[in-house]
Image (cartoon, rainbow, N blue to C red; front, side, top):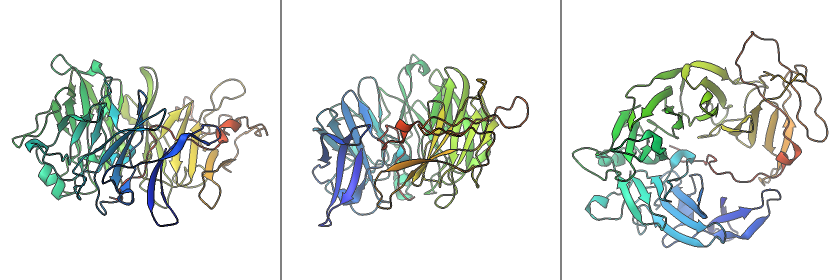
Length: 451
C-alpha cells in the first residue's frame, strides 16, 4: 500500500508499505520512501489502484485537483525487495506540464508481455513532434519503463483547454478472443470525452490532426465542454458484453466481437447514475447467471450509497436496489467506489465503513432472501488508525438465529415475499479472522480529484 503523510517538520512523504496480511506488521524493510527526480510529494496524490505483475509493483500518481506543479507518474518497484526499477513521468517533470494519471481509482493495465497501459489527463502534448509530453493520451510502457506506443485524440487541444481529461477512466486489455485477423490484440479506453476508443495494442494510433486512426470509436455520452461529464470510472467486461454508466446516464450494455463494438446499447437500466456515473462489477457462474452490480453515489458526501443489481443479459431487468435510508441502507457514500464481489458477498466501501451484502443458507439448505445488510466494518478509533470492528446492523429481525460468540455467521431465514423472487440476499456476521486489521487489495478504489 502507498500512504501519504506529513512529518513534524511539515515535510510531505509518499511511502510504500508491504504489510503482513494477518498482523499488519511491515515487511521487506518497508516503508520505502517513494522518490524520483523532480517528484514533489506535496503536489501529488496516489490516486489509481496499484498494479502487481510478474514481481513488479507499479504505483501511479495524479495531483490534488490540478493544484501546484505536478505531472503524471508511474513508478515501479521490485515486489520482493522494494527496490525501485524505474520512474516515468507522463510530461516533462521540470515544469507544471500536468498529464496526471487519475483513473477514478482504476489501476494501470498490463498485457501478457508485461507492457503497462495508462491514461493521462489534460496537460502538455508534443509527442508527435519528438517531445516527451503525453497529455490526454493512452500510453503503453515496456516492462523497463520506456514508451512503446501511444494514442492521443485528434482534438487534444480542445480537451486540454476545457479540462476534459481522457484520463478520468482507465485502459482495459481485452482478451484476444474479441479480436479479428486484422486486429488480434485490443485495448479499450474511455474518459471524459464520453467515447469508447477501441485500440489495436500493436499500433495504438499515435496522433493525427486529420482524425483518430484507431480501430473504432463509439459515442456513449459525447462531451467536449463539461468538466464533470462523459465517463468517470471504468467499463466492465463479461463475455462479449461491455457495461458502462456515464454521468447522468443509465447503465448500458454494448456487445463486442470480431474487433467491433455495437454502435448502440443493446439494453439499459431505467435508473440513471448521476454524480460520477458508476464503475460496475459483474458476478456470474461462468458464462451464465450474470449479475451486474453498480453503485449510485449521488448522495455523497452526506448520504448512503445505493447498490443496484441487474440481469447481465438485459439491464432493463432490475434485480435489486438497496434502501436509500434506514437500517437497510449502505454506509455513507464515497466517490468512485466499486462494488467488490467475493465469496458470495458484495462489499460496499463507505466513509469509515464497509457494508457487506451476502448470501446466508437457511437451516434446510436453501438460500435466504433477507434484504438488510447486517454486517458493518467501521473505523473505530478517533485517531484514524486502521483498527476495524464488526457489528451487526439493528435492522428488523426476520427469524434470525443469534450469532455465536465464536464469530460464526448469523442465519437469516427467507422473509415472506413473492414466489420465485430473484432479489439478492444480504448479510451475515463476518468470520472472526475477517475482522482482523485490513490489508490493501489490488483494484481498490482510490479517492480521486474533486472534479
